[in-house]
Length: 623
Image (cartoon, helix red, strand yellow):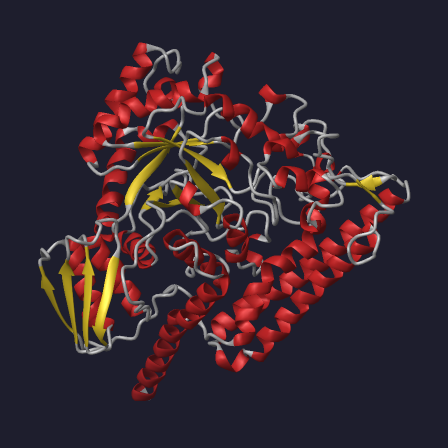
């Protein structure tokens, strides 16, 4: 009886371990242990970074020998070369981080000949994590960095670092842009140092979001005026304190005078005044100030919200210190399922910029919808050349959930961000194939599902350029009739679609708000005319009569119905594809994705019925 009990216990334990092994926690790093390769170094030290590279290769590479070589002829930007045969590989790089990047490339099967270098110097994750462990726009559990006990989960953060290094991410902002002054207090800075020590061997520098009024909230000063000498002295002292603990600290990310956050505008100072004051504080340590351009509100009363970033920042162009970078969202509004590119990338000609993309799916079904975002980001790069950018930032979708991202397929967006940050010329298909090969199976039907998913989301949420018609605050689900007098009008869905009995859409032409004038040619002229504006942006730039005929020959309400129907049908097809994969996917992950696909289908139907009912009533002149 005892033997039977022990045997049953072993079976249960084995079953439990099997389930844990398929809970998504391994991300795309699901290497099988080989313990076969002999790894030697030429010109390498026994540093923590090289030790990691050796360990990864010794455990997981299926060839016989790998040589790691520091080659000073290779730029020390993380670039690497892989040469030789499977049983006798050579990884060469200009520095040890490059050797680590080459290691992960080899393990995922990437043996492209020649020098493999990152396009963007800065490849940064932005975490909107709060010090109480909550995450703003987080859909995968609590923060991996912060908790009320102020404890550090070393193993979890090391796995986070490993995942990021495997796709070439080299920076991370540890806290929310809506920052608490407490972030710069001594107890938290000591925690930042601990985290930085874990991340450093993986080639990752830490950054912090800071509250512009920290000299008041933390330092006891009566002002945060950037031209005040005592304020300047406080920031210089604080920077010196930080760099004494973290010599390779990256710098500060700042959200100022936006959505209630303090900033230089509180003292009638410019954004360049505020950024330059901070830039001077970190300059002796080679630090960087990343200043967000997501600013709208009181100073622009009556101005179209999508114009406000250019209005606010163009007068400062060329006035920032050399160690200031402007961080701008890919679109001029706020991470919508589809937006035209942000014209601020055209207008700031003398200020380096980082493009801010959102990995977490705030406006795209959050952790319930399968929406692969590489096609969205590739669309952005077709308008804004990577060579004109100083770097790229991604608002993270990472939390303490076992699978890190809430939805198993949401991991693909973290992966795609890293791969495009390294090489924005990679195709969406190539990245999907890579990720599926490492996580599920690179089946053609799954690849197709991923590649179609973003366009499907646009169709069942906001086709033809409709935007920001979500429910208030949480941004999940449709609310085209949304209006609250207590809210700024720029937060209300009715402000954006402007549907009435005559037509629908926001007139941003030169006859309307004039937003088209902020774009470079040929887009300025193309977007300004209803006859040349691409249909995917039609209702973004024009108030279109209900009788207007689209390229299909359908009038606008018929075209909307067609596209909502198409989006729902796509999700129906995704559920059928997943059903057919049941025997090829482990049970736990299959079930969890299947459950979310059914939620997605229910939501897609809700979007269609809610929006079409509302807009048909508007067309008919009903309240």
